[in-house]
Image (cartoon, rainbow, N blue to C red; front, side):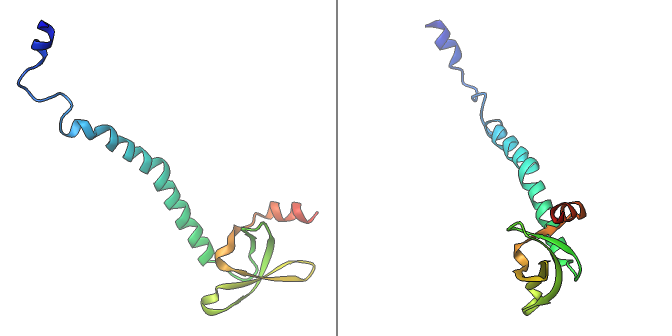
Length: 111
């Protein structure tokens, strides 16, 4: 009983104020640096690659098709005509391009 009376002091509790929210703040900072920041950098890099496409570039679509850009069509060049090989030409929306294809990937697929 004496122990309980000794702990009931008139001071403020130990975990008050900023100290109570410190773990949540630290989790938020770690979340930002491990997830949000790298994802933002990757998205900006992808957008710059898509904006800088030109005729003759070898690309990979999100559907897994490799091709070479032949022409641009539509308003703001939103539609891209690609040559998928053997004279097959496909129209692909610019938003469905995953990125530039590595030359190693294209040559290994055609063999």
